[in-house]
Image (cartoon, rainbow, N blue to C red; front, top):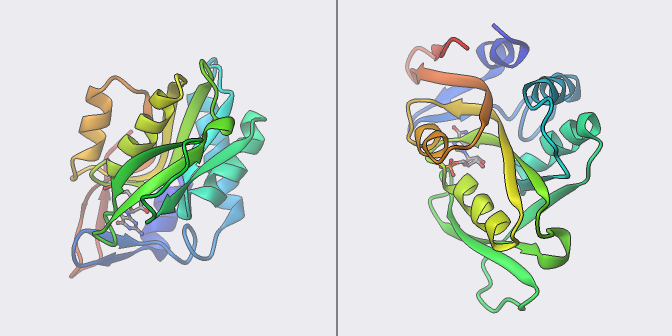
Length: 193
Ligand code: 5GP
């Protein structure tokens, strides 16, 4: 079991509705030592690939992406979530349905921060149905840049996102893949990697 899996078993809380609460170490209070180990691991898994920039999505991806970026020596850009439909033309946009809040947001990235032919590493905290990632992929493609790889902290392997993204041919590296979880017993089972 790797350190993220150990932390999930120790401090994660399984909620009804296929939600894993990890706010004590990942997306509210943040365990920076753990983030650093995660960054190190992604660096290893994407060894040999050219990465020019990390793209993530606010808010939970930002801390993870920033610590990971220190291992890659690249800047971080985060997509902003916006309800506004009157956006200026100097933005790339995509529509993303939120898994946790069940509403739709537009995500926006200023055109000046994504350039043609850049190799982009996408980072996020969770992968559930893959909507957030597909929005980020759309933004990267709009810029004429390339998705070099995708790093996810926790993939819920029993939801559809992982399969969709792997079928699209991307190198998806999830540091913990939850195969099943039980809200009554609190048990979490991981996919062997
Ligand atoms: P997707 O777009 O893949 O359906 O969902 C991914 C997004 O929803 C992530 O950015 C994450 O913020 C949120 N999310 C999905 N599942 C969970 C979960 O079980 N727990 C938490 N805390 N966030 C989740």
